[in-house]
Length: 110
Image (cartoon, rainbow, N blue to C red; front, side, top):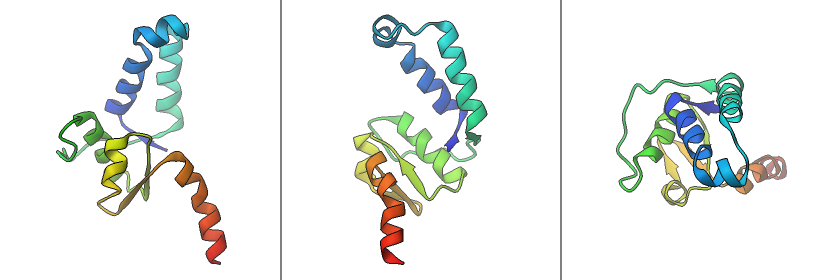
């Protein structure tokens, strides 16, 4: 799993919105634990190159930058803008369901 500081910050910001804070009872300590877990369990990538691919949502560009800088083969997302790109810089953009099916596809070809 590849992540970058801008992506971790966005995840924490989204989880800090009222929906999660009030309806899911997520507090500051929870947000700190999530941030620490993401930074610890993922390979952290720094952004050396800035992209402008997704005009409607520049945060999606940060995800593409992370995948490129980290040498990813796949970018797994539920974001329809990213999924609409399908491939970028040799990276295949897939849904979680598609990603989970990849080992089965490879096994069937062998």
